[in-house]
Length: 156
Image (cartoon, rainbow, N blue to C red; front, side, top):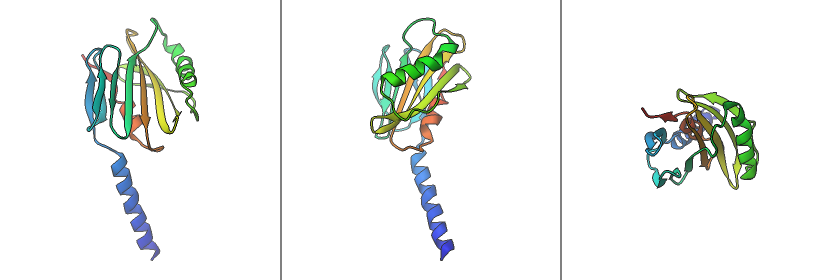
């Protein structure tokens, strides 16, 4: 009987994981040539020079140019922590650094009111531009926000 119970639990866990791992497809903020993968059923709320905002029932993704000129890679972590604190993000993780083919990045996770969120700053490797990224999502252990963030690229 234990084996049947475990098999049923494993099957339900696999199904739940499959449901949370939504299909991601490329999307692009044309004003600045930034692309990333987003859920296939997204709707576009804003696609202007001010920002790129896409959403569905599970995710709300905001991309904006970083304010201020000449932000340095060494300042990204402190600036990100400051904006998250100003936005009253609770349960903040420590800031982590990462690198993508086109960007140097920093990120932290936390709770934005009742939802989970990732805040990130991406600085183009050539230093020419920087972006603020916010991904608000429902489930705490959802792997997609990290996949979305790590898919950011600059189009040629």
